[in-house]
Image (cartoon, rainbow, N blue to C red; front, side):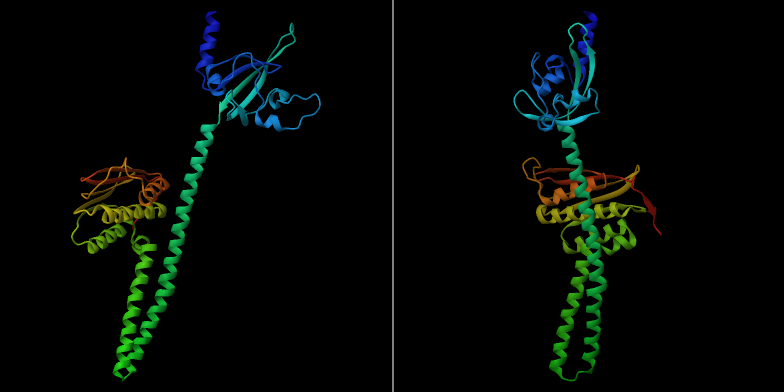
Length: 341
């Protein structure tokens, strides 16, 4: 009895459902995990899974695929529970005993709940799709920025040069003034194209690296918002993987945009350093703040979180109404880096 009790305790510790059934599929014994997963009872027949319910069988063949083959690798299907709900399971079976007296055959059926695994796999697939979409979007941004700079920008510059040469040959005052106004408009277009190109793909990022690009980014915000005091600490001594650089840049860009648009701060403290094999950044403002539990995350916050995940980083946000917001990101550098020229 002591040995039987010990065996029963072992079975009940297992997370997989373990069932012993006879050749008529009647349940002889089962552990707690099997009962919790299925709701079945001792003495009841094990129902057929969805695959076996639908599969074609020959005359005299056992409908249960696992019993028919007596020993099979893990097999996935949906199994009906006592309540009628279908649950995704991995299962296998093995013949464990032939009783020569009664002629009965006993089978061991092992069930593993596949629902959580499928949920994790679906979640991992969604994250992979998000990473690929972000990467594809950045690649498209880079291509468009190059076309704007080298195509449209250069064409507008050529037009400006031609108008300037034409203006010097025109004697009529009114025509001179008209050409001058057109030149001014072309100059504005050139500036706009440069701005669009920079927003699509900051040229400083590709030419000088993340540290320089972030300095230019913060300076541009300081110019746009002269009443806001910026305290900046940028300590990055390497060039990093392109995916790391563009995603960190976009996170900080989005954080600054959100702060200016919604928080209306007086001061922003921005710090980014490399240490302990990773990059740590924080951006704090003393703006209006909000209650993260009561505010539905907007696209900006979700984009920052997804970008941090894309580079295997962690994203945390702390905010208190009236006391500002603190955003922190930590990114490991296993993706690689290289020295600045």
